[in-house]
Image (cartoon, rainbow, N blue to C red):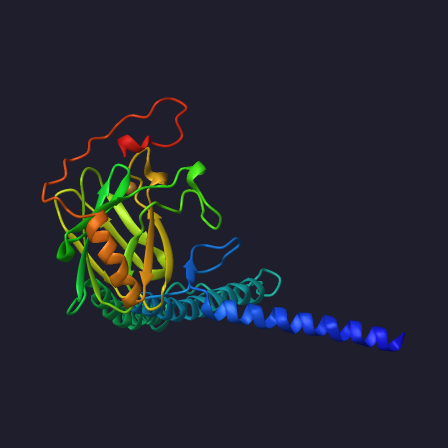
Length: 295
Ligand SMILES: [Cu+2]
């Protein structure tokens, strides 16, 4: 009996060990899938140099903000107790104190100057790619995104997947038919414009957030650090189809990217014609998403 019990418990432990090893290996091979989780607090994990530096700066600001909030709260609590009528029956008639007034002006200014230094450094760092290795053109449309690879004459629309097109592991309103595919580790210059109204190209885990504006070209850059899928959305209220133009960036290793590009050059070859400007199309009452022909 004991022998039976012992071998049963041994078997259970063996199964647990195998399961744990299985999890560990899938964990190591699994690619990054970056989207907001349920009950998530704070920003998404960073997967680009700009995102990494932004999160570092965000953490520094968090410490400064908490220190200031605790200091002000403590000061208020002290004043409430120390100077309440029962503890301080005859209040002083003081109205000015030069030292304190200079201090409460100078100290906040100093704090802002200290914050401004890393803030400007980061702003200039994220402004544009230094020596970009490739260029992507992003065009906002009503209501989808168009991606263009000018160096390779590749261009395609990226359309929302309708509920009946969603497969296992995909999310309605986040997944698209053709994601923007990028090679991992390459410094990519991104030029953005719009066909019609203002949109905003927003991918939080890569810290991309920039307007696409009709009639002008904006610039940003990205260098994805890990292979994976990174989700974002248009976050400028741009019209009735605003919720139906998510962004998916798929980062592939150099070899996988080369293989994708070879296929894309056939499937998404630019024919040299200029795309017509799309006009806004009113939706029918009760219609949930834009018909594909109108996007
Ligand atoms: Cu939009």
